[in-house]
Image 1 (cartoon, rainbow, N blue to C red):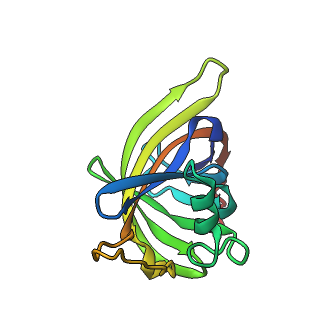
Image 2: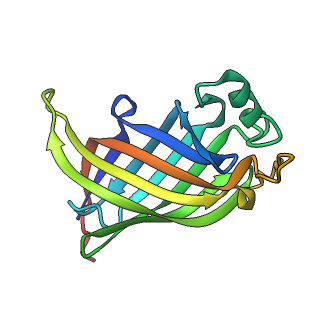
Length: 184
């Protein structure tokens, strides 16, 4: 059986999150620095082992003061918890893909499940083999220790507890390793 190793192509991938602000609008942010890999024994990635990390200090919501607040101890505490990490597996259940595994933020680890749209595998003009995925899911930020809360005078929540995660990921095939069976 052969195992194929893949790594994220950061120039063709993005990691974003969305959260309701004041219950009336949505703020979008990105992790600009991230890395990840997958190891698969099947062409459809069923059972592929996935690892991923994002640098908390790379948060970008297009507003410096908000970014600094998110990096502070009120939220991610980037100084003491510099990475978001994930380790899990892709499951293909009759063409219905899921990514299931452990997400860690602020030293809190929870098992999560995300929906996956597998875009397929294709060769690029430079001779590389690539695979594409769109991954979506939701988490409750408070379950991961991001508990800062504020309420307006009118009673509206400033930041929703629910955070939507969205990743567009393109993987680059690195190598295929053939395993050798030893008969004893």
